[in-house]
Structures are given as structure tokens and as C-alpha cells.
Image (cartoon, rainbow, N blue to C red; front, side, top):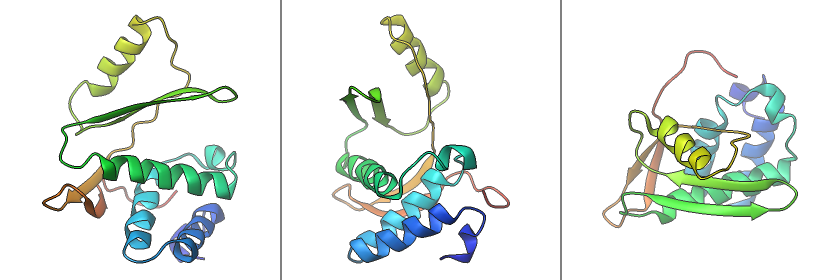
Length: 143
């Protein structure tokens, strides 16, 4: 297990699962993505995830972000009867973005049960594929 994740073993287990399931360089990018994506997630919330489900969701979000390519944004809706409907956006961070999206969703008559706003630093190649992940808002300390 990675020493940097000693405070939450699930993150170290996720890194190990990514390393054993993915080939390079995807495994390195996906591991960096997972670290940034989950780096500010509350420990209590992480405890609610099964390792395999966390891997599937993290990998799916990475693929969604990577597939955006050179487009200015990507939007998708995932409807899951047991979990509810998820609206996912992949856009550059902007002032008032979260408030604007929340207002649009609520204005359409829907409630917002959970809102996550991870800010992930992404570098893309000429075709728009992700080549590097970084933390756009570095924090001191760990989880």
C-alpha cells in the first residue's frame, strides 16, 4: 500500500487494483486521477464504497473526461434506479459554475441530493487526449 494513503487504506487498495488491472501509461494517469478526484473526499464517504465499485466509477469518470477531447465541454446523464439520476459535467472551472448548474437543475424541477465539484488539473495532447493529471488546488496534509 502506498504510504501516502496510510490514513485511508481504501485509496492504497484502489491504487494497487489500478496497477494490476491497467497497462501503462493508463495506469499512471488513472492513479493520478484517482488521487486528485478522491483526495478531498471525506473519509466517511469513502467507507461507503466497495473497492470494485470505486474502481469502476473512477475509471468511468476518467474515460468520460478523456473522451471530451478538444470539445469545450461534455455532459452526460446516468439514470440508475437504485442510486438516482446523475448529471455529470466535464468543463473548465469557472466562477459561479456550481451555482449556475444547481440553479438550472432546480429550476427544471429536480432536487440536488449530492453535489461534488472536484477540480482536476488536466493536460491534453494535440488530439485532446489526457496526457497528465495534477491537482489544480494543492492542499497541505493528507485525507
